[in-house]
Image (cartoon, rainbow, N blue to C red):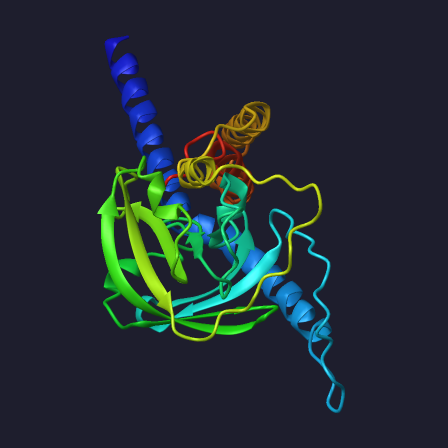
Length: 294
């Protein structure tokens, strides 16, 4: 009896350890698949926007100020390239949990890149493609190129600093034209924030006037909401519980078939790929319950 308990406990601990290692692997590499799919779709969408805003040869560009339509959360709004940090990504509007899973996110309420003031972008450092993994490599003078529907803009890094997650003032409006990049610090942790500031060295573009009746949140509130995006919020538990139960059912069915068949290994040969597929979906839903902070 004691041997059975010890054997069962040992198997349970081993299985738990394997599941934890698989989840860590999913966080570090599996989430990159989600980001890669999103980036492919965003690149197509951004390229289509660039085509529709290009002036055909021989025609005079329309200089009439366009009616401002604020970008929708999740929309592709820019293409950022930072050679020194291995960054070549489409930037989306928004810095919520789901936004940053697609790629770097622009802080709503701050100017768009290329416009006067303090434009700000956040990005993950170790999960979901880790777009800002090498952001700490940047030094003064390193170039950053950002392309929006308004054109291509070049920035040069001025400084980097590490601040607390509560240092919302880094996103406040500024008199100069700058780009502020934010990510978690150190790698694999959300204890601090790494801030990179860059100055605009090309001519800024004048933004169109805001829509009539629009109300913008105070800068400090925008900053607080934005920095919180790297920490995330919990999602609904039902999908994670449902997929978790399905994982258990698939594995139990595989074990049961292995006991019935003369060649029990055939059951695991068939059941293991199915189990891993269901487990991947479970991890995707379970990860939404955790702070998306690295």
